[in-house]
Length: 108
Length: 116
Image (cartoon, rainbow over all chains, first blue to last red; front, side, top):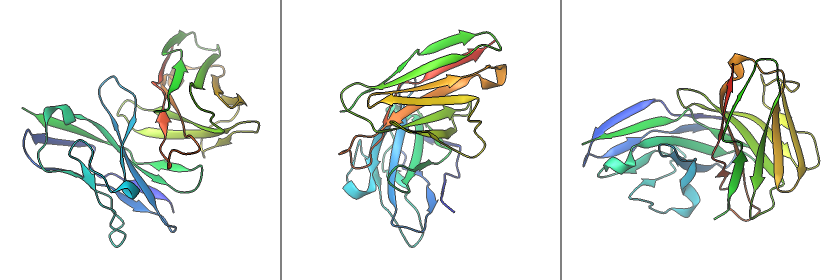
């Protein structure tokens, strides 16, 4: 079965604390994984994709095929990171599967 | 970056009427667009995949006759909620990808439908 699981609906951390948003996937093929972010009153936008192996706004995510995970991490959370984060799996040319999302709240 | 625009951003209608939401790719051609429904707790549910010139592919549990999707051109897909009921009230979002976006999806700003 093709599935993306984000176990945490809400994650609250204090400013300056490390952040890890969990994402696990189930897919028999070669996965392409993404993190999308939705800031308050804004549209969903791409944060990063695993094939680029990049750091965006201090966030990184490593694809771990053994654990079928693609957790999003940031060493020091900032208040402006507060948003809704979605993990997504591209499971075919025109098929994308999104997780249910995790709301990150960064407290002052 | 590529821009996807939705219209209207907000619509209020009476129960039993039909509402059309447009999704346009402004600066690229999109052979495929996707329609989602975002629930109050922000869960994102894929409703259907819209293919230019052919029938949409609906996800399991989504009523085809209720949510009519038309993708008449490479830059426009429409979602029509027919005979709307209060339970259809939701936030509807479309997305599209370009041919060279490395799989990245570009999202519209969403349309808030309220059925009275």
